[in-house]
Image (tube, rainbow, N blue to C red; front, side):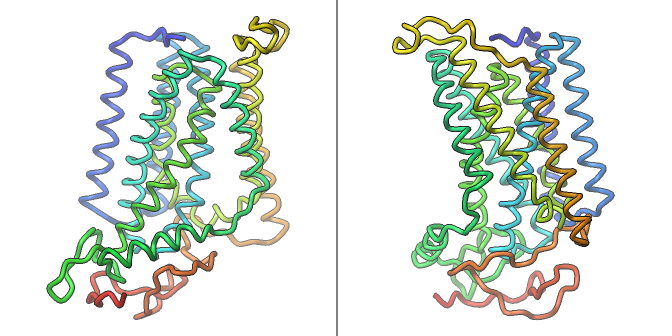
Length: 370
């Protein structure tokens, strides 16, 4: 399926979006800080408004079908990106990343995610063009992912911890951060800082989420341009959303079920679409199954919005009944998971904002004891 969009619109859109991402990255590098609630709200609102305006532009330059596909794809990727934030919180907590440098870590993670998703989008579009029945596999994979999302174990995988210990045994890694540097000098010797481990953890997480998200959006549209722009808009503003939601993330207890429902719905839609366009010789003699319904973009959009709305409202109701206090605007880094082999820091003072003890940024480095 072609996007039916002018080439100048596609090229211009990609250039503008890349420039925005570069400007955002430069802002983080030049001024690492903890965003206030007002700042985070303004940035998130800006990116959401930009995505909606982009959908309006697609409506005028193409048609309502493609605008609807973009909106459905963006909302799907946005919901999956919010799910990423849960993992990012765990990673930041596990390695005790100083809050003023969390923006930079998130921005690097977003860029890594874009690279991996771009590769998977190109590979996915080629495979789909050659073999439409791959949608059967995509659909089954998404149903399995949905099941794990809703009912899978949330325990930490000790493989990650063994890898961290293996890496620390072979590479000089300091116990403490040195600002936002990847390398530092201790007693005249070069050491990597824990930031290296954080980037590795973020990158591997991005790969796993890309494997889930790309089949999901290909279930909504087969246009590589729409798939890629929906992913860009879903990742833009994600770091500000991380600070805006703050402690609310851990309290949206039904969000994972909403995301699981979306993935299951798209999985069923992919299987139905594959059957509708069937060319497998052992199914109906290789002929299309005309009687199988093809789910419309409008229905997809309604189901996606409905699932997220129900999950969010149900979580807020459960919070209210449980009288749970929610802190907005800043991420509370409480230790939710006991991680064998994770790095420990000796406290220098109590930080009331974090709810835990940390070292002063820029405190003297200690030699690696391992």
